[in-house]
Image (cartoon, rainbow, N blue to C red):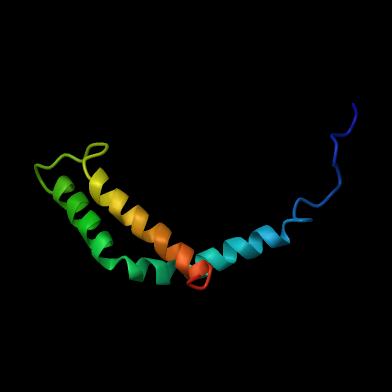
Amino acid sequence: MAAPTGAGKSRSSGNGAVWGRVRSRLRAFPECLAACGAEAAAYGRCVQASTAPGGCLKKDLCAQEFEALRSCFAAAAKNTLTGGR
């Protein structure tokens, strides 16, 4: 049986740049989240209200709040990772 192509090569070779970008994004996460405190709180309140006794969390129930949080987070991440450019 023939060895698969690339056998014996390290899986991490060539991935240093990828992991560097991942680490930089993870380091920026707290700053991005802090920039979206109001949106995160609104989403959290929606989910909490939906899961309170008698509540029923269903798909898309908090979609509006989630979209606001996602948009804020994406904008904050873009500003943080590009240095505000």
